[in-house]
Image (cartoon, rainbow, N blue to C red):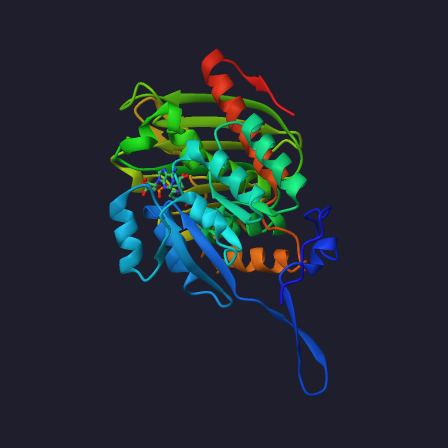
Length: 385
Ligand code: NAD
């Protein structure tokens, strides 16, 4: 039996009052043990990403998608084909006492209302990224989570990316020496997708679509404050929202980063997903593959260089190092499991851990994206934090 929720409870961390939530005790022969319950999810918005949630959750124990709601009748039909209960309204989702978790995968402008209503209905509420369109809206959503005591978190799934976690390891372990500069880049050649992604009122544009992932990753990796932001957005295929951007970040600890997103690069494979510059080495990781290498110095003292001859003159300074002073190795990639996002939600609901994606982290990324827009608008460096 689920125990009844105390009226004044607050969502919190391990050993918090929410330990009572969603637990069942079963007797075994010799001792009592706590069994995880089966969590029921309803997906609101069963489009591309909603369906991804459906597929992923199906692979995880103790959690299942009971049903979904989508305003598009085709997607309602699709839900039934996939064996889900197609709720005939969002109200019907909220009224179902069996639903523990509402996952919102609708266009960005609708997240706020859906999440607030789900929290008020007593559900754990997960929204797709970006959580919403601005930090003020996010603060409202967070206030409702705190008021109701229900868990609210954001699907920042790229925290589980193999390339990101590999770069984070290089950063943390100093395998390249101290990292002083990072470049995080995603380039494609299809411009901006149509539909809601190209409309400002629905939260379109690449800063909110891809920036939210790439900034989140950087902020999870580089410690300390960001002092300055300089960004420019592009409008090559779309006047109304940005179809790409570059953002230069300067951290308080001296680390600098370039975040670079474009939908208009027809030779995207020539540019890596990541470039990591350390004092004693450089790593490069390809986009959409697990090909990455790191080249490290083996002998700082050997200064010989075969000069590069160009029509305009000689350079020794920029001549490549000879092979006896450097060593290149393939990168060993981390092997994360993105399903841990939902496993973490269940553990958090059982009071065993903290949410992997915390709202203050999400709010910081939201403020950073606002600084990116401000820098672009003013054509200025923006002081941050
Ligand atoms: P989509 O257009 O494919 O799907 C959105 C679905 O929501 C559609 O089926 C639409 O009919 C439905 N919908 C719209 N308003 C609704 C409402 N009020 N109630 C119920 N259903 C509604 O879009 P998508 O690509 O699936 O993106 C959805 C969300 O997922 C966006 O916030 C997007 O940023 C995010 N997303 C995240 C990732 C990721 O890696 N985390 C990847 C893609 C998309």
